[in-house]
Structures are given as structure tokens and as C-alpha cells.
Amino acid sequence: MKRSPLCSKTGFKKIPKGATTLTTRSTLRNSGKSEVSLCKKRIQALLRQNAIKRDQGCVLRHYTDLLPSNYSECDEILQAEHLHTRGASGSFGDMRNVVCLCRRHHIFFKPQHSQLYWEIIERHLGPEGWAWYKRVRDDHKAYPMRIFDWLKLEMELTQQLKND
Image (cartoon, rainbow, N blue to C red; front, side, top):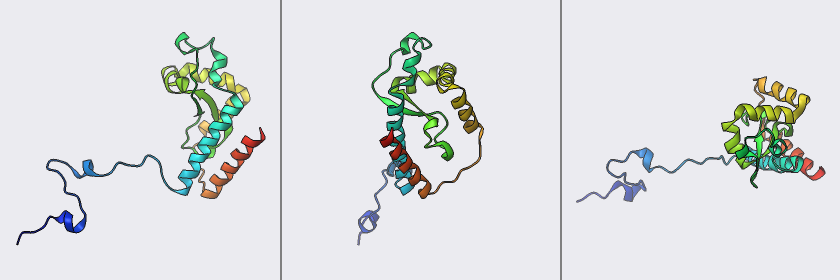
């Protein structure tokens, strides 16, 4: 009696000859499905909306005299730029840590002209804002946050969007 293939009984797929198991698996998700992940995604959207409302467009449009000629114009897609990494929970949802940039300045200008970008941001933030940014940048303590903290932050940003 001939044996039937393993896949018909167990549901396992046959691996093609020469393929590794890594090439036959499903692709990885690029965002989580947890309540915290979903809340952080909503917070990110609220930060963008608040930054657009506060800054009324790309902040670099006010400094065209300092920009190279090929970067003097903005495009229409606006993004929230976190000045300090989003990995730092303590400043993730703080509006002082966010400026509004157009996609062109965010993706192309900032990496190519990093020093000029930070000089302009320092000027834009002013002495008080720049001092706050430097304190956050130099603070390496962990600030653990639970779902309650993220939901509270989301509520504050929602309220801020309604009030301003």
C-alpha cells in the first residue's frame, strides 16, 4: 500500500526542492495588533493632525532663504516629524517633540543636509524649546508606560485638537 503525502493528513505544505523553510513562511507584520500598538498608532495620527493645525504647514517654508535652491518649495503631503526618537516613551506623544514637515523636506532634505536641518530647527524652536529638546535628548532613563498611560495621552491629544 502506497503512503499518502504528509500534507494531506496534517495540513502541512510541501516544501519545494531547494527552498528553505524561511522562504515558504508568511511575511512578517510591520505593526502589532495589541491594544498598546493600536493606541500608539492613533496617537501618531493625532500628533500629525495637531502639528498640521499648530504649524499651518511645513515649518521649513519660513526659512527658504537658508535652504538650498532645490529645496525651497514644499510638497503637499505633510508629516509629523519627531525631533527625538519615537522609541522614547517619555516624549512620544509630547507636541513639543513634534514639528510639521512636508514629505520632501522630511525624507530628502533632512538626511542630505542634517546639520543645516538642526540649525533651522534650533532657530524655529527658540531658546526655551531647544533647551527642552536637549534635556529630552540627553535623558536616557526608561519611562515604562502601560495601556492606561497611552489611553490618557490619546485623550489629551484629542482634547487639544478640539480646543485649539
